[in-house]
Length: 270
Image (cartoon, rainbow, N blue to C red; front, side, top):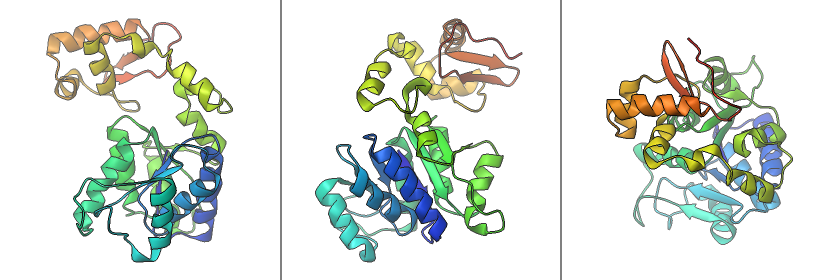
């Protein structure tokens, strides 16, 4: 699970981050964040305290892994180095830059099954991570805050524009992390057993490429799916029909999207 948010976190934002992270980490999930001030630090700290996963937390850095940035978080990053993971795509010795912070956000999103924004202002960089996650067909969640404070305006924007689902606690986040919407109380072993039985696991390679290209919350037209999947128009149209018959895709006048569970053939939304 990725946890991101404001560097200038409020007491509320830090508290809800610790609460959610503590709950999810206790179920064995690795918590991924950016090692920065505020929400990042609260998430990493809670995961190191409560986490039962191997590793309990991972920090994706915008600099070389030999440079602890920000320096005030050196103690925290040292603990992550010892008990978790420090990750970076840039060479040793590289300094952090604004561009590298934006670039590393896509890695945080890609490494996680779901991204949770616990507190974010209107122009928070964490919204960039949320949009990367959405583009990768990952689940995105946001925690609501005080409507009279600008500190959660970015979270409210994500929810209002249907880029994120609203969550209040760790149990609701676990519902997103659980395979195919299994009960949030299942243990990790049961979750892994269920994952092995996912209907998409039996798809032929070209159908799996098409299934992975389908977005979860917005419709995509066949031409877009051709570009993303690398399949021909004929393969895409034939494949979409097959996925729909298997309950893994649904269509509307606006295009196609993925279906997360299989309860028989998905009805057409036209």
